[in-house]
Amino acid sequence: MTKISLDRFRLQFISHQNEKLGYLDGIREALAGGCKWIQLRMKGATDDEVRPIALQVKEWCREQQATFLIDDRVALVKELQIDGVHLGKNDMPIAEARKILGDGFIIGGTANTFEAHYEAGADYIGCGPFRFTTTKEKLSPILGLEGYKDIIQKMKEESIDIPLVAIGGITKEDIPEIMKTGVNGIALSGCILHAVNPVEETREILALL
Image 1 (cartoon, rainbow, N blue to C red):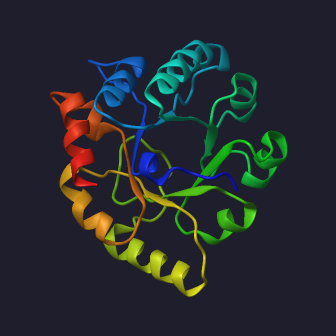
Image 2 (cartoon, helix red, strand yellow):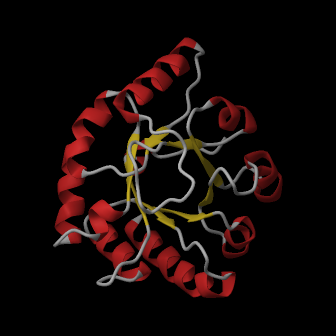
């Protein structure tokens, strides 16, 4: 397993775009606000469309000492020497991605629980959804606070130590209660992207973590 900086891990920005901000705009704002973990997620785009954006984000993340992952695209991560890849439940299996990438890359996976990804050698788990979210199709069952508490408790009982980030429809107001469940971080998209001032919003969120 690749060693993860838990300080960087506590706030993850998952890229998206809206009528006001494109992918690069949103990532630039999140980094300016102090976010140290960026996931480039461009569902439906080709690798050729993702590549120039990924190269720019890689440069920014190096300047800001931030961790940079791409969603799903294992081959592109290896080609561009990005920090790692995040795999959804319908993406390449984690064990297969590890064979391709080796041990020098971070591999995270989205899950509704933890066992399978842990056994496959994931470095962290994006656990959710916390509540309904419009940015994801084919949602798994909603977890809520009790779901996270149950998962953390089971991990303790089985002596499993793997970083867990809460994901899915989370707002700034949710963060204090979610962090009390024992998760290691929060992954956000719309909460930052749709804010009046995304940079300030990111700073305020970090102050809650």
